[in-house]
Length: 435
Image 1 (cartoon, rainbow, N blue to C red):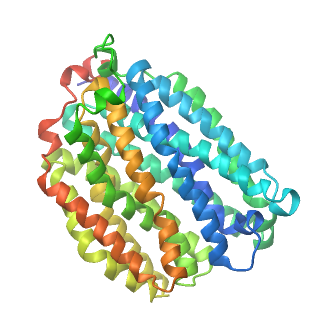
Image 2 (spheres, one colour):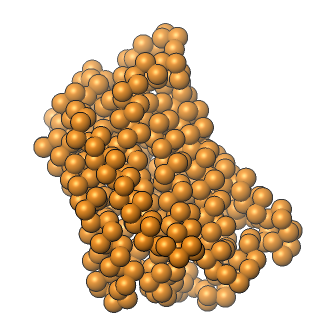
């Protein structure tokens, strides 16, 4: 293969991934800055109670993700991956702008948290559609020999969105604003940034190339992109839900919730917790392609089983040790161990799901059952963790996470290796790969 096609393929995949980064930045900005705006929307002196309120809205936002997974997955299978991805990133900009402009409880009362909730629901709809369409697009753009490597960039950009949110938070904390200013008004700035980035990503996605897998699929199929067609693949739907269960819970525990865990349980300063989160996520993002490339060599199943076994055995020891350790280096190393373990899932879960379905139902098949599972388990992870802490039984959450990972391990053990049984056919590779 010549250099030119390789560069062209990289450009196409980059165009598809950049919007993913922006979408997840907007999504995670809420989680990163909630430690500052929680008292603005929910007045009260109990920090844990305020965080519970914002975490509740974070969880409710996940309820829209199955609707987004269904709506945008169906659109992607019927009208094209590019069309659905362009629309989803535009919706995200509206949600971010609404959060940035909403006055606090002291000015408009109960309307403040209601508007916050509505904006979060809109963001949930958008990001619910993003996962399935982006996973499908990246998987279809790559050739069979390096599909794990290229599709891993979905989580590079997903984590990159979180990194961007945390990075902006670090700059604001250490360089530009005092703690008082962050709480009073500066927390709004990241949401303005998110709205502007979403508009930029919208224009980038308008120029993306459509995948040949979609173009060469049966355009006249009457049930393409429908739930009726999806239920013709019940085993694949159950596999998507089962392999997502433990992975999404572990991911949100070690990324989104970890920053609050370091502040609320370990009692680190907010600035130190943010710095540790940023450094760990930076390394975490960098290793995703390594795991993806590894799966192209040895298969997807060994990596999933590795995550399942290590997650089942080590989640309780890791979380318990972090909770009783305040020295920064040991805490950081334990965080990295946890993220290394969960990489066995995050780096390849998108391509595994895409390889389970034919092109006519792929985006919906990837996005909808994933979104339902994430809404039930990933979206409630932070709320349940805080609830366990508030009830005085914080370690109960560690065992809950362990149980969910173990259930997924059983799925990994009995499923086929999708690298060997992929339904993404060679004739579905993009035109870039052909030329």
